Length: 125
Image (cartoon, rainbow, N blue to C red; front, side):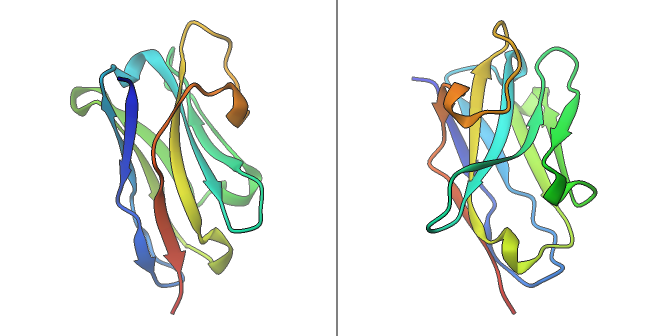
């Protein structure tokens, strides 16, 4: 069964720098587009960062540009989301999702096929 598994969230102070990661179970991440999405209570799920399967090019939503970095370690079959300069508005459940690389690239959550269970990131002093 294809299943991304997230970990690495937690309680972080404003300005903190956690690095959640997404490990693959049952598939090889390098052949998939990987997106990090987040959903706060009462809000819609939004895309945060994406990495392409073909060339590892990356994309970010404007609110995290310059603060978050998505990267891939194919040897470990893992994708990371380095978060820096966290703000209270970054508090959310963060999900890793995968979309097969032979489809066109997409930033939309409904076009991602495989989802992890999410990891909570709470920014609070």
